[in-house]
Image (tube, rainbow, N blue to C red; front, top):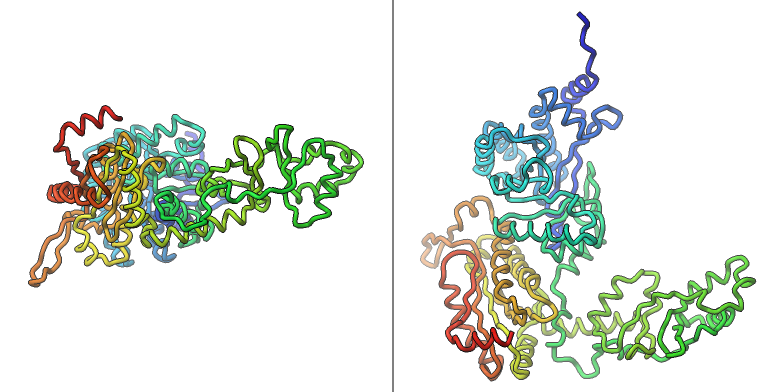
Length: 607
């Protein structure tokens, strides 16, 4: 009888398990709304020079040889030890297959004990189910998940959109996190169908009370789309590749950019600000008349002009109707002029040979906010040359980037005088100005006042720093739900906010705010307080008093032309619906004053 051939993968796996010859790499998950690292996913790397180097080959071989659970348990322990030794912040995401998860009931207590010895809370560990293998016994899976949750572990569903039955599994598992497969994230900026899929997942997550993670993010345009769709946690090469010794904090490049984008914009409601006399608010005020040329001007003439004046940075090129068709940039022109044979060939040619045909062009009425956004997306090499200003399509002047940046800075400083320092949202003065303007103009809108419930006990238990984070969460939820083109968000102070909604779908926006706050606020609580639904503190009589977890509530008033004389009268009318909303039990909620049926009918006809 012929002996069976040796299995090189089996021998390699034996050595790997016996010698523990695998490494753990970590890739960060980024909370883009907070501009910080949310946690790390642990990834296994076998020796590079061996047949098991590919993770896919490694785990398939382990499954075939009946050693998958043994291998994954070793990896889990090594990952936890490395995570603690490196002092990494946030949560630790650990990948496990269904095979390993099935035996979690017997091992959950042992794993929790090991974490306690390392000084690591189970609430910081997320068990991530990868659907590379089918699940045979759903009842056993449910029991394993329950055992993990009872110990304080969190659960995630990996690669949503792939696998055997991931959407169904979501409904059955009710995980704390769902991670969208990279196929639906990569290139989402150019794929409306992917956007619709992710939008649906985010909406489902709000309903089910779980967090969504976007995996495989590699391109900046995709990041912007994900932000607009409401995702707050992203993972991918755009931020960092997996590393055995990862950074414990975001790079300066990303922390600054994400923090700037995450904060509500000071200029978002700049029209509500009382502007100082002579303040610059639009492109026309930045335009300077200067030298221009036409396509009839030769390359030689342009080169001579730049050589003669080293302060001359850019020259607009206009057609015979005085419309800009391009711009000549000194650095580019002088560089081209030194190229071999350039002057011999192009000396007498039209200057269009040297022209940039895609300059930044803005209308005289363009507000500073829009110009600042446009400039932020411009190639850094072109910033020094500024922008062209037009009126009715014809040339009006040339603006300098330095003047724009100074004007934006001045306006932000001015705005900061009237903004809440914690959230940078407009404060009482611009809130009242905005309301008075709408009332005087006879506009139809909905005024809403928001308040965080049970906030003081939370502050007492978790500290003012975490309390500030809850207030920032409320600010983000409100601004993300508002349409910046027509709606207004202000921060009165403390945990009180105001919204002025001119959007026709205002009621749906209020519902989304309640769901988003209830979902987002969960990450601030300990597993113990989440399970209990609150916590106890001592009252003034030194007696224990139970307090529910914070929610957010709102009172709203429908405003029709002629209903209120000014912002002060409208503010007084908001007190009653706010009191009604706060008196209701349950999660976050709002109450709309609907006592006058006729105004509601008129509003429906008006809109």
